Image 1 (cartoon, rainbow, N blue to C red):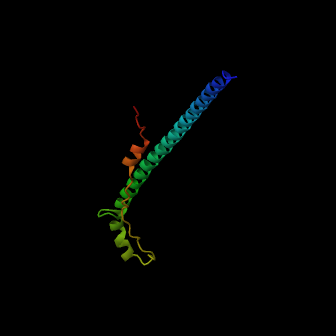
Image 2 (cartoon, rainbow, N blue to C red; image 1 turned 45 degrees about the vertical axis):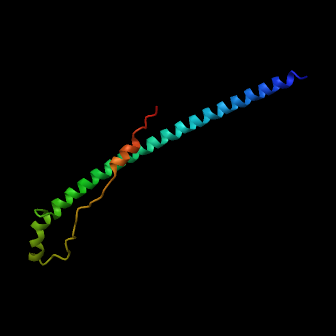
Image 3 (spheres, rainbow, N blue to C red; image 1 turned 180 degrees about the horizontal axis):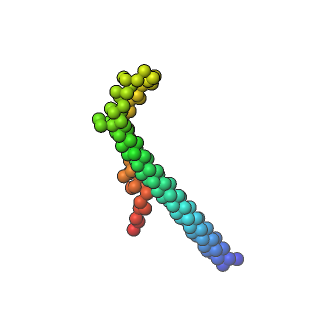
Length: 115
């Protein structure tokens, strides 16, 4: 009977070790999945930031073409004074100065190298 107890303890220890290894593998798998999902979201955010920056640049250049010093507003302003049919006022337009942190997004999208 004395021989069975050490054998049972060894088997129990091996079983606990195997269970710990299985849990460690599961944690590693889940961590990899989460990391990959964060990379996908960061990549999408970076693309969105680049798109917003492009849209902002297009908006600003259009505003400058309309309301800038040599823009369309200046060329049609006199029409408002000359015509009796004018019943609207030109809306004041200013370029938008939106600051998108695309550099920080780029850092978030880059995979982190591990040793």
